[in-house]
Amino acid sequence: MAKAAGVTDGPLDVLVAGAGYVGLATAVSLKAARPGLRVAIVDAAPANAWEKDPRASAIAAAACRMLERLRCWDDIAPEAQAITDMVITDSRASDPVRPVFLTFQGEVAPGEPFAYMVANKVLNGSLRRRAAALGIDIIEGVAVSSFETGPAVTKVHLADGVSLKTRLLVAADGVKSKLRDMAGIKTVTWEYGQSGIVCTVRHERPHNGRAEEHFFPAGPFATLPLKPDKNGVNRSSIVWSERTEDANRLVAGDELVFEVELEQRFGLKLGEISVEGKPRAWPLGLTLARAFVAPRFALAGDAAHGIHPIAGQGLNLGFKDAAALAETIVEADRLGQDIGALDVLERYQQWRRFDTVQMGITTDVLNRLFSNDIGPLRQIRDIGLGLVDRMPRMKEFFIRQASGLGGDTPRLLRGEAI
Image (cartoon, rainbow, N blue to C red; front, side, top):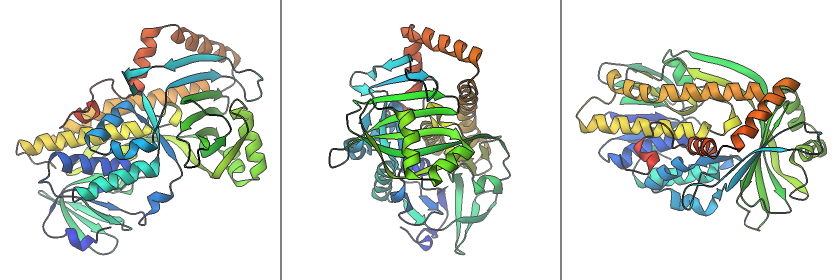
């Protein structure tokens, strides 16, 4: 942890608000490529709060390449579980048999799985250690209370009374971004009436790297493979979309009732199961910022876009933002341009906005298409899944998109230096 007073000697080049994986990755990418830039991070969360995050995330192959380029992957790899294949079903929780309509197997390159599962605290810890090695100050436990944008710098006021000056302020402070509101950037937002229940499950038999996604009428239920714990216990991460009122009742109610409901969806293919820790639920919705930039200000990660977890792409969109923003800033700085100027930042906006809007619409349509029990619609979507399963080139396209390697990919996500 750094004291704010330690970064007040002259203006910063970039101040990142938010020390989640997007904020950390943005700062590390900038400093690694351009050591002369003065980069700092300010985070409202208390020190070490990140260590208590029980969740895990799917990291696509492109994000793994970026982490390897940033010299973080060797630190993460021992705790990462490769996803070697994935199956998709469409049924009711009470159905005795769940037909598999779509399967994905293979790698994006020899020996390179299309995704890994990594605990959030492992990912965050690695990025923090790399930030410290690069000399990036992290001011923890202090929120940004306001900021004023000037012609050359932005003056940022912290809640502890300290003020900082920076050429560029990056807001990576989450889907309910206060800095986005301070900048006057509006959003397109709606709620799904669903909440995502997240927990870790222990089970008798190994998962062999298989991920499963079951489409139930109330929402998708994903089983994602985790690395066995230090005692060799088999584990999986659960991301369970449920109607909000039912989700709240389940996580607040009796543990036995929760496990019975979970077992009905999880099944017994991996033997007896038990829940590790306390399940938690988060409301699900779609949030898209109407603009990603303003003078001397840029949004990244969930501050720019919050999407449904149905495709597991939230983290990977955030890494794309971090890589694209870093590449835009570094190239501008090399050319002697003002890194906070609106014309520079608009290059980042043009690069990322279409992709994120497209992904937001895609996840919204998928959720509406599959989170129902309408008979004719179920038949149509099951036929569609079956057709895709019989088209190798189409499956290869979807795998490449899921791996983060489709479209105009930033250099870091290709494993290249900026």
